Image (tube, rainbow, N blue to C red):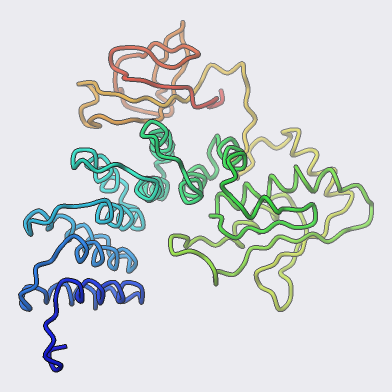
Length: 372
């Protein structure tokens, strides 16, 4: 541009930075952004957001967070795009505390939270094993009147992989029509495109027991197909190995399969009479420790999980927000479970079928049975 005697401006800088972002060149994007002052071009919210997004795509959460924190000094107001890009960067890096802090800061900046801000925060919590916090964030979406999309459900089901309630939220996603490819599932095949690892395992489990099992009765082996793809059409947020997740479940269920020759994105299953009996046993709960998180709910249990929206001095280190915490029912009072939560976080809460009631809790609801 200088050779053509054309002065670069904020629009040309932002467009070029965005092109670098789409090309996965975060170093080039950052270098361009850093040359803006010498070119006497004022950085704005668009150029900041584009550079942060480029760093996010490159897995550079520290750089993204540093850029976001530099916005006030540059007299640039953060917007939903800069917030979401920074939360996504922290999410990809598994920095759930930073992601959560940014999400909490959005209302203070008069910015309404959205699904593409909640999803990476849920993902960040899940990657660090904070599944209860991930579930709490998912509940917060309803409180914030944000409708969860397929990305939110994928992130949640990854966080709940091997934990209780995964099946409940998977079925909820099905009821809401979130996973469109599953609507076309047949007894002979299922397409896992667009699913995360946790969602894919639950989908295969659902398919086997809901669609395949009723049709499986012949002594002769029949061939069924699980379409996993091999990553070519996978979205940017999805770094999981769908095929490995499906294979892991099939191996656990002792179902014979093979990767189809010349099509690495398709698994062929050979199912017969023995598989029919084995699947029936699993359906009856004969194997209660299924790693995909398909627990049997027992209504007689006295141990529950609750979603709590709180604001209490004794919980000052958490600030104001929400948690999913385990409680025992003792005389109509919910007492935090020492086994699940080793530190005292607050006074006992009054628990009823409608939720949690006491001055320390702004609101709450029963998430489900946590087992005995």
